[in-house]
Image 1 (cartoon, helix red, strand yellow):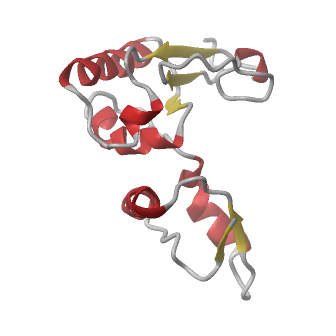
Image 2 (cartoon, one colour):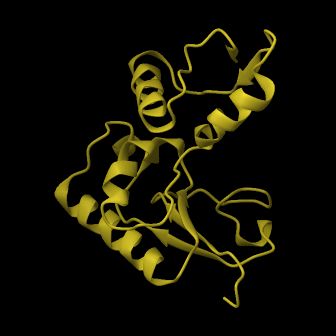
Amino acid sequence: ENGVATLGVIRLDTNFAPVLGDIAYGASYSYKVYYRVVTGLAPQVCRHGTLPPSIEEEFIRAVVWLDGRGVSAITGDSNHLIHFAKLAKKYTKLPVFFTPFAQLPLLKNVFGRGGKQIAVLDAAAGEERRAMHGLVKEQTGVSLGDDMFLHV
C-alpha cells in the first residue's frame, strides 16, 4: 500500500476477544493488518504439531490468501503455529515468523554478553516445551537451553 509495510496474521479459530495491544486487535497497529482465521485450527489442534487434512488445506489457503494481499510478512496469533512454519514457507516467499522467539538471535547478540541472563516467559511445559524448544533451535539457531535464558 503505497510503500507502507503491511502484516498478515494467521488466526486460530477461537472465541477469544482481543484487546488493544494484542496481535489480533487491528487497532493495535498504525499500519494495515490483514487477518485470516483458519477454520478448525484450535489451540489444542496446534499443540499436536500435525494438522488433519481439511485444516491443513484451510491453513494453506490462508497463507496463499495473505500472500495475495501483498503483505510484507506473515505471523500468527499463537506460539503454537511454530509447528507449521515450514508448511507456510512452502506456499510463500515472504518472511514467516510464528513466534516471538524469532527475535532470540538479536536478543542473544545484544543482551546475552558478559554473563547477563535473558528472561523467557514460556507457558509450555514437559513434552510440549521440549518440542517447542526443538523447533525454536531449528528455526532460529538459538537453544533455549542456554544458561543465558532464565525460564519464568
